[in-house]
Length: 307
Image (tube, rainbow, N blue to C red; front, side, top):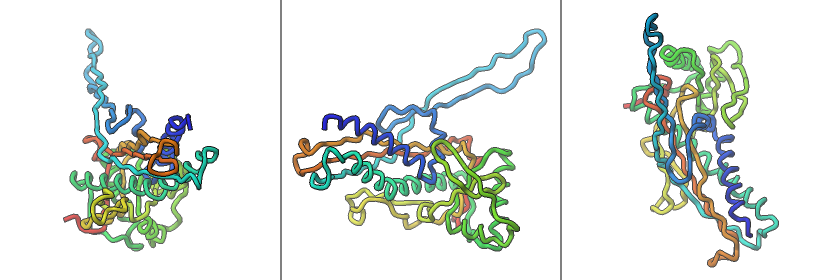
């Protein structure tokens, strides 16, 4: 298969797009639009600095300001991978692309996307807790969830103003909100689009509410290495200390999320010596960052007490 490298490039692009479209946290990748990526673990994030206003002088005119554009090199801490073998009895060159695309798409949908979501939400929660931007000890109830959510939204907006916010909420919490005794009418439904992510969602105070499976909304996870006893199946599991996140409220421009399928390799049956089949090496780098000056636009509500 002479064009295996071309197939690899196409798969990498399609797999990255799938995560941005289908992950419940996919909207966060829009903030990485100016990130420079040339392969591997490292990315470069632009940092813009500008001077503040100064007095205008009738004699000297304007005070000249300085504009700085620097790139900060960041390292993606999540370096994950898997190898797949497609037996020649089940596949041939004529249907390789269709079958390989199906396998990789299902692998991402069932295994990769939930893990990427879980990592992002847990990191946001950990950072928010460390910065004092979280509260704990609230069990969602149809009696007061609407008031509690509105209060947390107001807490953020009181500091940053009417900046567009996004609410990531566990599906069990969202169910309590939908049945809230405090809501006199149903929540508005509207389309929310950010980058390649697009979905119809409930809205509260013009803030989209993105429902997230509860298993992806924990404060801490163990990302299995695939080798240690009890971790050989790979994937991820909630840490023993994990708490349940009710919701995360943050401005749309707060999280910078990056996920890159890198260095994907495809080997033909002629190249694979140990088996008769096509071998595919899948490697995913991903991470999330929040700038130090953006924590005022973030608040996390946790079910269990934080201390």
